[in-house]
Amino acid sequence: MIDIDDKVLADLRSGFNLPAKPEILQSLQNELNQDEPELSRVAEIITEDVATSAAVLKVINSPAYGMSRTITDIKQAVMFLGMNCITQVVTGHLLKSAFEQDDCCISLQRFWDSASDISQVAMLIGKQTKTPVPIEDLQLLGLFHDAGIPAMAMRFQDYNDVLMRATQRPEHSLIEYESEQYPTNHTVVGYYLASSWHLPKRVCQIILRHHDAHFFQDSDSDLEKKILATLKLAENFSFEIKHFRSCADWHAFRDDVMLALDLSDDDYTDMKEDVEEFLIG
Image (cartoon, rainbow, N blue to C red):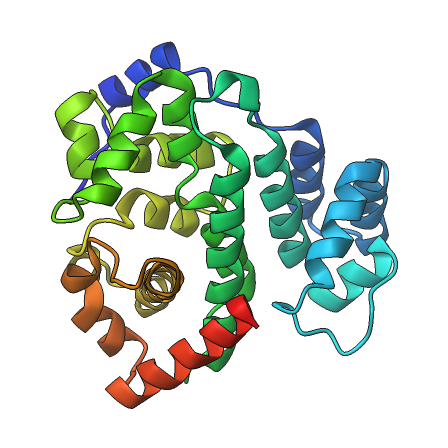
């Protein structure tokens, strides 16, 4: 179990220059919190920002969403996806725009490409599981679950060395290497960032616990277990297809993931083939 106390949060506030929640996201959240949020107002808020509108339409028309027709404007997008889902898509775009490459010691392009793959694979898996998993949560988690990594890379100039160590010596997970070197790790920083942006509580909690296999025993929510299981499966599929070996922590999660998603070994193989075709073509 991971505990986040006030001292940890105070240290993060003083030590990390994390991106502030964008005004457009605050406006969307304010509208969603109304007793009767208006679809047209949500579309209007998004349309006011040309870059965000273009990014949202690009995401929605990607194969991961599997739309039967091309969505050409934001009002259509809100009608098709619903206000909560469209807000998650906007949040994902804003997150990617929030970090500056000049301030960061890792390649943000490479990082976001990988996060985008995991996000899309998670959505693909979510559509194939025997019980539904909220696509909007998977989309957002895929992008946000490792958002603490670019934040760490902005704070610590030797952070790329730690990432390389974790890649070259996968007998330990990244957070173990981080804990040897720093006073915090990317899951805690990611949790703080997600909380400060007022993302859904279950999304924040899964960001915090996504390297903690005890989550499956600690959580009373079958839905949260399915969401984390889908994320871990997407993470592992993406890693296996690119690196020809499992993620460092897959062995600790595998049995719980298979159980939570009610998957057999054959299901796993079939799903991996679908993901491989999706990523490689």
